[in-house]
Amino acid sequence: MNKNYNKELDYILEQLILEYENIYKGVKFYSEDKLISTNENISQKVMDKFGLKEWEINVLFSTLYIDKYVKSIDPLTISLEGLVFFNNGGYVEKAELKIKDANRLEIMQKEMKRYTLGLMIFTAIVAFGTLISAWFFAIEIIKHYEGLK
Image (cartoon, rainbow, N blue to C red):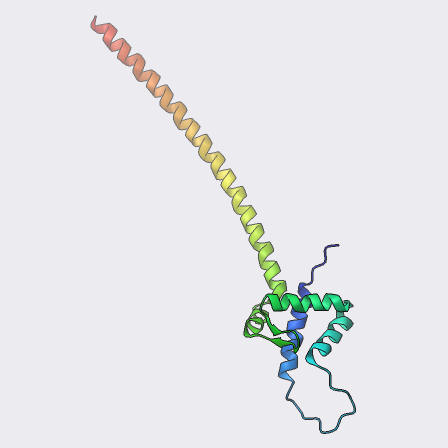
């Protein structure tokens, strides 16, 4: 099974940014709700939206940590690199750029093969023309020396 988690990773980064934007908006003086951590809150949102299991979410958090887009997992905090990376398109954009680069490289390789073939044909024509002119001048030199005798 080959599953691509780029959308989920970008969603986690987006939710982290939204969480930090709204962390100090409004103060709750009295709340019956138990305060939940950022890690638990984002995990629940990812589970609800994408239907991932807890171990998959933990792997995603670890991936973000290894890529240095998250400073720590518990408490879950985004890094400056993560903020910049998300604003530059995130994992989805990075994957699309890889595909575009691979396609561009493939096109360039095909063009190089075509130009190489053209250059080989041109070289063969020049070599054949040089051979013909060498034979012509060799015959002329032989005729010139035979005419002197």
